[in-house]
Picture 1 (cartoon, one colour):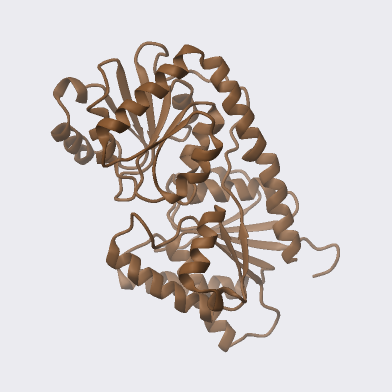
Picture 2: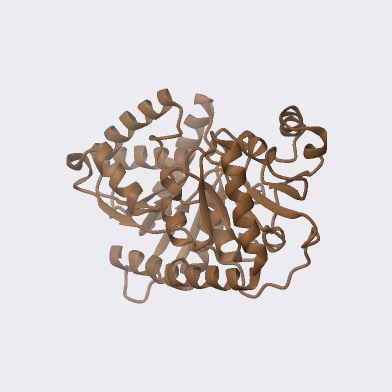
Length: 386
């Protein structure tokens, strides 16, 4: 690459709807597009990649990059992705999401033993959560651990990016220092990049009902049924807003209806996916996360950025946020009554002086998670590889 040419980066995501990986890629695009040529590869866009509209950035859709139990879909996606990567002439290929990471690394291993003419790109993999460990189904966690040991040992030298120091240490300990020694281990947190001092129309009135907000899809990982159990122990002056893929479905509503008394169920709002979550955070008194496992939740970070208290499940991926957020509580989702009591105490304190609490939360956010500092770390990582 000549001194005047712009380096080319290929960012690979999976599912095309609103979720953490597309948001993370959106942040990467904003941080890097002024200096580098970027190509984004993902499954079919379902709203998660709308941020690319109007930008001079190529977006290539590869059906089947969403995690699937269909071998045929996976094989087709792998063939198409392999052809694309061989034809991109990229300087850096950066893979995100579980299936794209697997397929990209299989391709890199294949090219290690059957190289093509020309230089190989630098490889980056971001683990948006470890595929093994607490909260995962035991059999899948065991298979994922064994597969990761094989991939890590055989993949050519790559930069392995983790969202927290704890997850990077757990990875090396679990996979083995001998298998990870030839890789470059880095920690790069998630961030949030909503405009400061937002003036948005609130979709729900403030100071009427105490408002708990959740963001996330209806899935095993997010453990939304635990939220219903916790909400059942909150008083009648609370409401729960559920935002995310699948939260508007009759199936989820039926599960909540079976878990809650009718008067309690009436105070749950099943809102579905939202292009803009910040108006809902604006009216909230607390953000609730009941996940069984996380990398570093962007939803919780957005709540942190919005200046509201957070109640997070006691899992490894939430430790940093709980330590850094000045008005947060750790909850045991298997003890819903105790969790509800902690949330009540947190919200009561917040409502006594919300302006002061927001200022303290904002100060903590700016000191460690703000986008400008994160952007500098991203640019430094890319420059160090180039």
